[in-house]
Length: 446
Image (cartoon, rainbow, N blue to C red; front, top):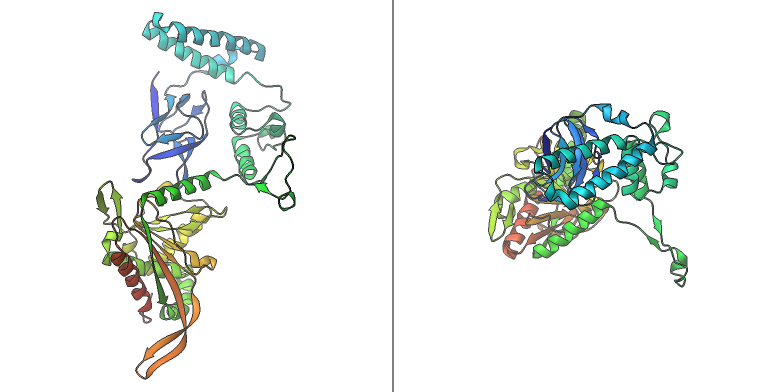
């Protein structure tokens, strides 16, 4: 029987590893072609890894929450499935348990005396043990009043779900049996619960805020994001530049065209694609900002791939990427922004849609913030943050002299990596972006 070594696939040039968050298959379970075997997570996206062929999972190389490197083998699949005859060899759990004890002794003997066993016989014995365990896994049951499949019981064990807690979960399978999807749904709701502080009897009570202190466990994505941000601060020398920009002309133009745009394209025209249009022009003026650092070398990118920082429903952050954004017109940008932002909030992005960004944009003005100092999204060297647009009194120069008027203004914040971007380039870059917005052509048609 052949064996296939399933490896962690490449997930983008900046992704070297992933956390194995959940096994979707257990040892002994059959796997179809393109059926998912594990769920994984990087600091950018959750995904799963499918099998490239059908067979039976016979070995796990990693446990849940282990970190796996790209290209590393994490599972072994037997490419030819056995008949179901072995399952009929044991008629009672007691008989199967007796066989388990025998198999355990055989394994210990092989481990202690394998030097006396010919290599080809060792392989035959190992395969026999695997086959026996596969058969037994379908026979042995616990004393629970409800039947649970090996997969459900394994998930419960990995997640620390007690038998009592497991009995309370409502199943949607045949005969109200629990399924994998039942367990996943339960764990998602369980992870959102707030865990109260438990005080041991020997610990004196402390009345902090009337005993209302709470401990909230960070989600896995929050932990990954935190690690990514800390790594960025430790890697790059962060410097910021700020420019106040008069976007009155841009505001007036959008007010004039947004309704017609929606009727024609069935898409909202937000300020984000308008801001990104100016950002792309500035990146063409200063291509060094569209780079990454690799050791002591600078890799200046030809493609302009704009990462769009998006807040998800659970409060976490994800950055989908508009690939070759400089090849899109304003209509194309608006549609790409709306599509990626919507699917990002709904956690419906594909892995390739959060990879290969060359520069990141975030609109913190959506939350009413005046400005901010965003952290660079490694391995990029710059990020732009747009604040809220406000009505402001401003001095305007006219042929008849200065006057004060009401203008629409926004603060643009630019964080850049001072290792290769000096203050002059970083400041000129954001000033050029500001100029493109201030001089917006109000005669532009879509």
